[in-house]
Length: 428
Image 1 (cartoon, rainbow, N blue to C red):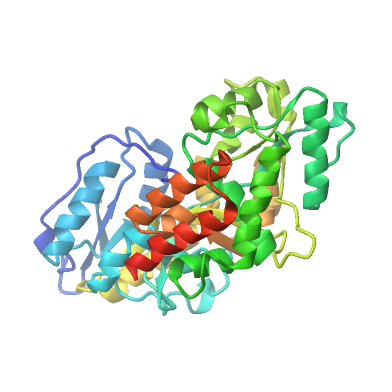
Image 2: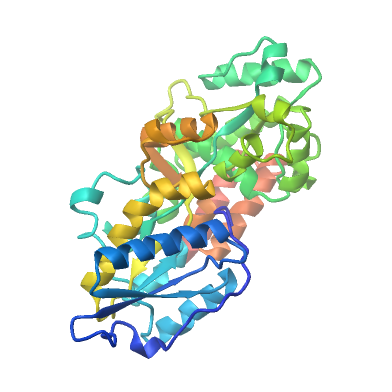
């Protein structure tokens, strides 16, 4: 749920799936690559235009290959992918989500390895950690297109009025919290009725205290949730609660409700994904004076912790797969490589998408905040995938329930860790 979901309307496309990968009427050398995506022109105009431009450019450079495009709405796409996979009729190239969504397709040998595509030009193209989310047993089965990270947005005017600077350490961060609260300003707004928002705060503390692998290892069972760093992260989160860091009634507020105090200059800080960037840059419905007053900073370091300030919590959106059963696998992989190389710069300049590939910002005409985020991503040491996305649906729901209990101080840190461990152990 943490990854931006694009609610799309249905759009035509299609063709006979049985023809996937066969030669076209253009002659014995003509190959057809079937490509299915979920960006209809009616509801995702910019995405659709970029895709079509890339397809046209590929066909122009490869006259022996025709790319047959089918476009479906988000929900229709997910349903059709399941049906096609069950009958070994997946498109040659399609879109997939990371981690849990991919697992049954990988286990069922429906997606092919893309390790060979990552060699050469693409070897250092992706932001650190993004391909890992589309990998299993160190083999890549998808190449990510989009990425969202969660910085802490802050109101520069509020900070200035209260003689505050951007905190670099967690102790400095707590000083910001106590100063704002003392001066009658809500330090942090969070809508923890949707506990994925609170989970991000826990995840960053886990990263900064325990190190970038600790939480992921606890989830994938090479580690444990009862690791001292993860328990300490839960303790520090409750310390923030004790400091009255969060907006009043946070466990009963949804994310949109909680965003209100920040957008109305009543809260100093708000952690959220980079899908919020347009609200602070290009959205004309938001007053320009407010947009100009917003900045962002990286989650501070923790004294004695194992984490790195250039490690982010976030997650990729969709990525490209190639079907294991494709009859034109070489052409499909070549198209995927071409698509990834063209997508990065176009997606950010034309659609406001943060791509999973590194972008040279020197020549781009973008709002400064976009450039700053892209530059941070180019130097990212790690991206830790949202915890609930890494887990099974049942474990994710229990994680979110426990996050809400932790924020509500209904459960001590040790019990928080123990209950996570029990849920994950039961799935081993």
